[in-house]
Picture (spheres, rainbow, N blue to C red):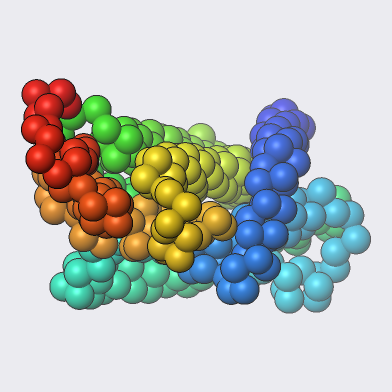
Length: 357
């Protein structure tokens, strides 16, 4: 029984490391591109900082938790010093992932102070409970026959299983709040802005579903192993930490995918905005300001583009284009005529064809 349990645990850990390594290499070009953009912009944005935080705390938690399991060089003294390290990185990874969701809600609320304080209070309460239930009562488990090191939590009212319950509740709260804000801001029609908001809504839902299933499986696995091995806590602990390793990997991948997808769509929308403004350029408007060439990595549509959205309406881009049209018409002595969201111009004394949209 012990041999089969060890085989299952080792297989789960190896699978999580293989998937994580593949995803890291696959997303490495994206990280390099963000580093170059940050160097060109001269600063590191909050979003880019959170991206690096979730990326490398995930690497650290996977490395530290699996080194302690596969190593054969631990002693009781070194194990007593090391056993809390994977737990600490697990909590930092969870805090980074939850901070990304919180900042996303704050940005979607157009940086509302009340919403910011609400999310901050919920976030702090979540972190306190997660740290308290994960670290409290934890003690090292040294296997003298193998020479590896692990840790175990008490199987009581405030055992480590509460961590997963709290994580599910926080993810549900932030996802529901984000969905509510997106639905209020969702523009009508099939514009690029509408597609961006729908993408954000769908991505947020998939993110919640994936993480919720991961946490539920980890929670069920945590409780089931104690029921399966009531008199063998070391076997239960081995399976629990192996399942947790797979959970670290999935949380890392899903959080990264959420950020990468949003960044790519925001960049596509910015290019479309630049091409629309480019249509109004003339040689006489050389000094007219245009959007920056660099793409800033933000969790939502950057404030320069989304700060003035009205709920259920179009973006401030349409008003910007109208101003461009009027400016162009004045410089050529024409009278601009605004038809819907399009701006046309007609020479003085010439009737404009307002029937063409």
